[in-house]
Image (cartoon, rainbow, N blue to C red; front, side, top):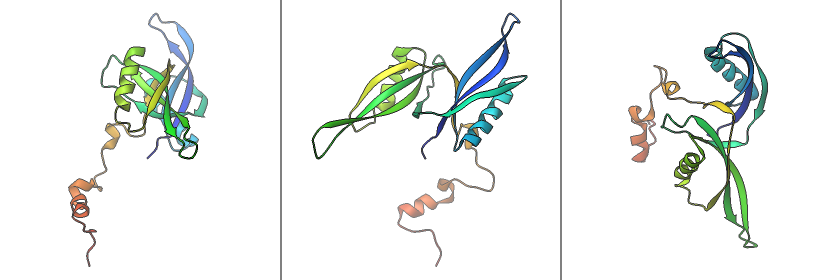
Length: 176
């Protein structure tokens, strides 16, 4: 399933370490199926982060197609990378490029490039990294986090049900 990323800007009053209040407008990226769901999800996430009033000042569809997370805790910034996927036109023989945008977690530009290249290493088509830029995203909320992958008690994963084994053997799993 393809992710639908939305960029949300949340405006609120933040209290600094020195006790001063400051109005901030922070950007977040959220995966959702619609604008309504994106608004609902970002509001749900902000309730646990922000004490006090806040509002969503902007919500728009993002051109980001893929998010490349990092296991390294030092990778606390988000970088946007523009990647050209190179394809040859069969009729004219000319090369065409289509662009995809990736959001990469990293601590600096060098690390962002390394993480992106590691992510793209499985590509079988030629590609070219056209650019990497720093972003203002504070956090990214994918549709399924590890905590959300827990299934309800009334559902079983396919591997526990034996359905995958039946499909591999050619059986359709239906009784006659």
